[in-house]
Image 1 (tube, each protein chain N blue to C red):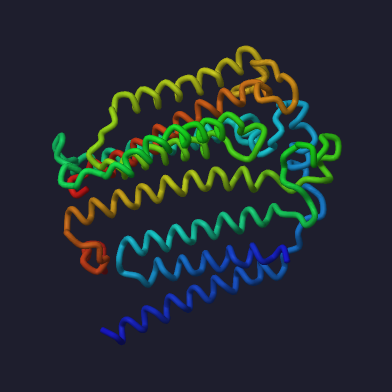
Image 2 (tube, rainbow over the protein chains, first blue to last red):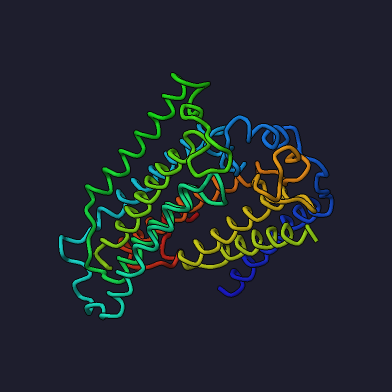
Length: 238
Length: 118
């Protein structure tokens, strides 16, 4: 047994050594660019004029490559659906989980009540400021879901309404696609952000539809993460 | 100096793959894959870095007119944002399947799952 074990170990180490050699040649021959390539230079020069967004990464994700982001959100939706499907088969009966825990103390309950609004506010702030500062809908949605995680950790017997989460998710997803179609009708193409005025560069309500789209993405991502957390929470063993 | 982040990313990839290939506990294998995933993100972001330039945000530090000469490449950062989200989805799926496996067999040791062994 120990012999087989060492053979396996040696094989793994040999493979990783080869991979490491490949990485080393990449690293040794790497010279950072001294100027932006054509794609990046286009984004650098035209983002402010075309989209009105300060954050170029956001402009790429929401407007220039908006269709890819729609696909990304779809992948996340599929993941949440599959997690619910896989874990739904071992779902505990109603009221069956979390009841074995001691009630959480006064300190934890009060602390959660105090912190939760601040966390949700911060999540909303990060989501709608995506076009001005680092951040955006995905990060904001993750922060919103971390508020839900705090609730679940502080009171394991707590249940959210699946219906509300599903509604939030489907309404924000549909509104996202509707904004994209409006872009075809009113502006230059699918998910074009110029269906709304670009506004003053650097203001909160600027960059056309980007803050709106990122708020919707934040809601959708937050709802998806929350439903994943909930699926994990509602299994029999928790 | 700019190669430090890239070397760290490559090291993370190798470390994560080593962990995923040698550990027998499924949860540890998932941790290994997550480490390798993080390494890929670090390498990708470091490819877009250019010495002496600012982040691709057009605020007071970077005037709009000089943006092309002052910012780093924003495309890898946008790619990595996507990759992080997809990586999170994959991790959630792996954990859900690990839970199902545990429910089915009462074990998280990969050696107990012999159906696919040859």
